[in-house]
Length: 342
Image 1: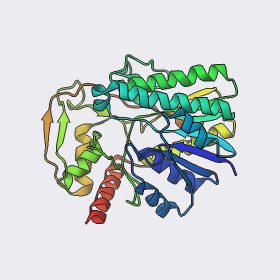
Image 2: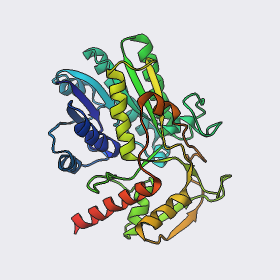
Image 3: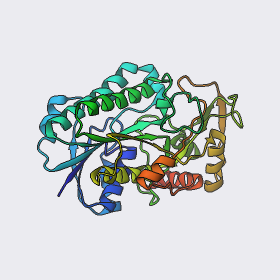
Image 4: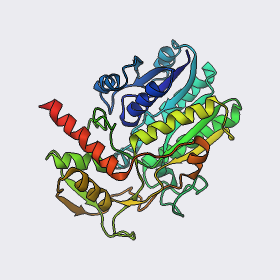
């Protein structure tokens, strides 16, 4: 049986991708995580949803020696799906060196390992932040990168460039780079969702925590040159993102890729303002949110949303869930956390 390594498998998108891999494929799945921003309990949640066994390895990918030791013991590795990275825009502005070390050193070590083990299928978790303040909307895969707005975004730009140059040196190496827009929501069962260890920086978990009195919601700026003055994002359900990874893996293994490094935007293709997201949550939950308007936040892009035509065409991928679905699933997950904590 072929093995797929998923780094950051206990994290938000990684855990949902484990669910999709276990439910939709026959691969032996190995999750690698050091739990720096995740929890081992997510593995129990995954097992409840899938009822399939999988292997777990606790490992810091920045430790090259230990990485080679632990992962070399695995057999028949068909591919690597690499999530493990720090992702907070404001935190990356406060401590950029931490982000460069964690996000880029881990990728470098994985590419060294892939080369040494002759692993030629690689999927990289990237971000729409590579486009910066995009020069055109919606952005396509041909939209040029602009200067990164945050250190986090820069680590993703650097990561993509590392993969590109590495691939040029090793023609057998085939990769897919998936540029996420704004993953939100939770598994529709309500049993698995975003579980930040520290105070969340992303909008939706702040919304759900605010609804149960565990956080306060501040909106950073309402004076942007947008349809309602609020930042515009392309929110996409995390399970749709996870499904795209399974399709991208099969795309490589079935040799359907037309490029050595294939780039795909993962978004719904619709720009949604922060205010529209708040109103959607209020509509599906029946909860009225108290929020305040604050100053603009350093590192925030004004507006970005995807042209996802290429992913639809090449990966045969189609987002399934609506904005209301995203908010309702996130609310079900928050209610599950409250119920299990009491």
